[in-house]
Image (cartoon, rainbow over all chains, first blue to last red; front, side, top):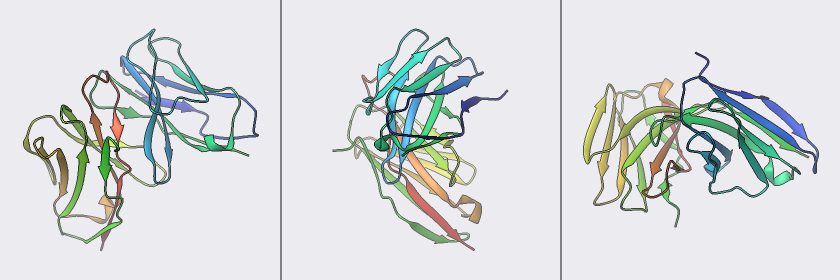
Length: 111
Length: 112
């Protein structure tokens, strides 16, 4: 099993460009999450999906949209990237409100 | 007030010593508590979870939970250089569905 996979691993964008971060899990988990991690700020939840067909805002949702495409896949979209969105993005999944399994992360730089 | 607070460190301990990592949380009704380890440039991985008051041991790791004081800690016995990492505390507060709140992490260095 691959666990949680994310693409791309690295990305550089110019201000105003858009992109979609992809995440997939093969553990048949119900819940999926998108976090960003910035120095000194810890992991902050952007959006999560408790189950297929549902999405909810987390702590820092502004500037992002998500799609739970099916049970396996949960994508994060930046419509108009800003330098403040420079960060490391982690996708995670879990059966429920219990252990989360994290993907390898995407390092995004917005110039 | 942040949901979860940790001392950012850095915490340095000699090899073989006990490392003590601490975390406080603000929502008294929280039921689930997790400790994750994150090596530099890598993703977090679970070390332990604890749901009940008291101690929970797993090998060299012991998680301690005190709900009255809203305090959860992680003890690492016989610390090894390979334990050098950032340790993240996470809490699932009540009435938040599957939301988790993470602390900012404590950086631990084990000195050979």
